[in-house]
Amino acid sequence: MLSAILRGALISASLIIAIGAQNLFVLKQGLLKNHIFYVSAICFVCDFALMSIGIFGIGTFISSNSLITNILAISGAVFLVWYGFCAFKNAIKGTSSMQIESKKLKNNNLLKVVLATLAVTLLNPHVYLDTVVIVGGIAGTLTSQQKLAFLIGAVCVSFIWFFGIGYGARLLTPLFKQKKVWIILDFLIGCIMFYIAYQLVWYIFECH
Image 1: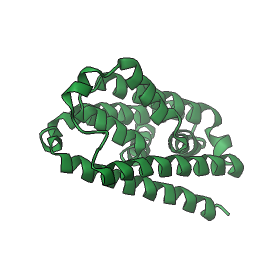
Image 2: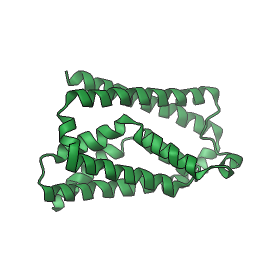
Image 3: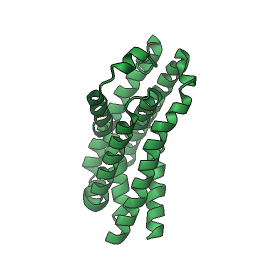
Image 4: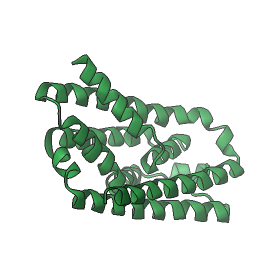
């Protein structure tokens, strides 16, 4: 049981800690102090649901179906290229959408934040590759009891990570009051999104 919990935790950590669109979104909301509890909670609940589906349901089936995994990979690459393009555009213009502006913060609507969090989580096919395909595929060889322990380890890491970066981001607020820092972050986000998209495309070629 303990070994299955640790295995689930390590695999989840290796996937979730890698910088991606969802993590960067949570980081930005944490910097902006923007309904961070709801943002972190939604990301965790989605992770829990998708990992459960992958581990106890369709993860093994999807991971063995090259057509489905390729569709997810291509869709994920397109999503990330678009996300990266928007980040580069903000960096070039020097008008980052993430800059801390008190007037905008006062007008933040909880519903809009919730919908944006759901969009960046559920409309990103890369999330399904990590949670359903990879995590589910790895858990496919385990017994039912081991799968439950594996899930416990995986979701514990997810909970700690999302709430950790959400609330921990506030420690960086003084640094991000400078406009140039936001521009640099936008540029780095663009590079990271393009790199992850490249990895997904390479994944497709490796499978053939």
